[in-house]
Length: 204
Image (cartoon, rainbow, N blue to C red; front, side, top):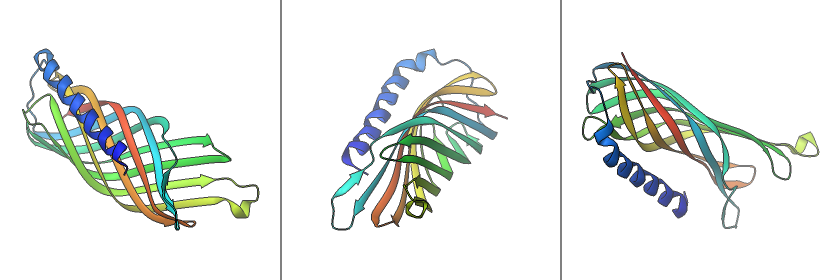
């Protein structure tokens, strides 16, 4: 992960914290959390693939944007914490020198922490992420096809407006890092996704 991407994650989280502090007076409704929680995330993401060639300097594909989403089921043990397991994914077909398809998706175990019991939250998670990459060549035998799964991690932050006893809606920033290793002569291959989304929780 480059320094620029790390700084981006920190800056976006800080901005969400500022927005949350300003918006807290507008938040209406109770925040009792106890039991099953279903979450949906819909938004737009930017994905890049970092890699190095043997004897070469680190490189990256640059950010490719696409719609993204996630689904999760969890359990709220208190107003302050939600544990969940879910699926998040990103996909884009694009053209560089050749038709290319890139998919990054993961099954994650995540924890959401609400420091004040409402409004602002931060999260962290670990799971299994997959990078699925395909680049078409002039001859099919030279096509680049790669599908590799690795232990991955996620982090993020957001703010939730509780709009009823059973639902909360807000904004979120999500970061997903999938380090998949080597393929086709490339080393240290990793997928990095930044997502800005509408985040919805249904409290059962």
